[in-house]
Picture 1 (spheres, rainbow, N blue to C red):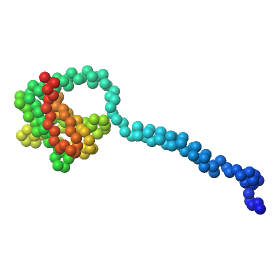
Picture 2: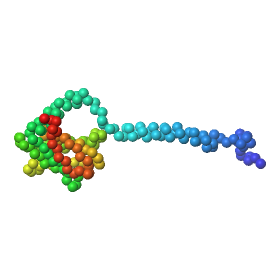
Picture 3: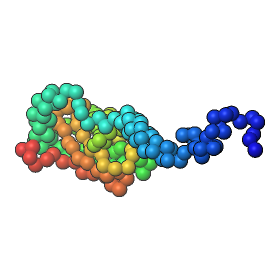
Picture 4: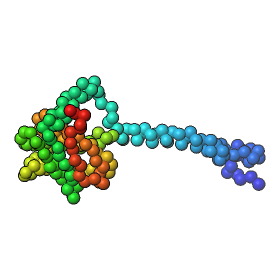
Length: 182
């Protein structure tokens, strides 16, 4: 017996045993593959925009030319006998630098660059002030876990020391001029 509310088209479909396309499971199975690819594409696009790696610099040519100045500053640190021990206080927010200078006076302040190897947005530049004796102190924003590169120099940029450490495993690192600087 036929339902009086049903249309003649539905009656033909029921008579032929056919269902509308959107009620067929194989249609949705076929559409799931391209839909997953589109969703993955949007997810990849979101990750690309959200996490700029900062590895490509716009002025790479100028930075390449400046390498000689960097080497001169490392040679200057070697000639003056500059070395340092950089350590984090227990709170993880204070940097203490013990500086040794064999030839010449101590600087009035130091500049410490704490650089993330792949994420430029995490880099920090700190101005360290004298804290008595050969120590300099400064405030540090919290670091993420992983490897960090340190660049320490005087305020006038006449010498430079570099090194790296793993946070939080190493709370202190010794910075000396590279022997190749001589």
